[in-house]
Image (cartoon, one colour):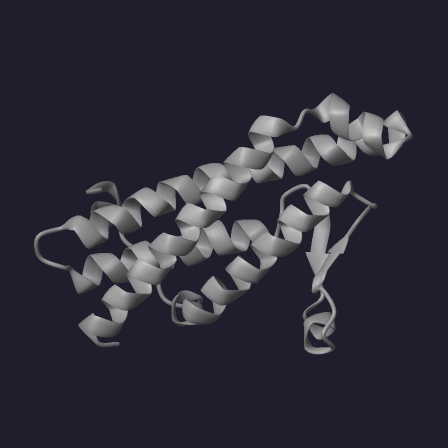
Length: 167
């Protein structure tokens, strides 16, 4: 991969992670667990579900903010380091993209075949409030673009701790 292409990939990833972080932060600052449960009906059925969902979103926000900062460091260096950029993008793939598509609480799944049929590829475990559905589906589009752009880093070797800790 050429240095120019790698730098453009970092710039696009930086822009997308910034947007993801802003959208997640805005949603998480506006919503509470009790509000979600109240709007969804049966507290026994939805409290644990929404607790897991919010926990997954908080993890995704932290991972996205950390990755956003590392990509920013990569782009701000006086001399662009291709090796560092590759390791940072590898980290984005394995922390942010995988965190989105494989939420720990298993609150939704991806059915990629639905995406090919023109339907939304995210399948929710339970019916969620419209704002959360809209947020998740919007994030899925952004993460799908990043996953397509960064597929090169999916199976590459794990970055060394020396380089990642130098951020």
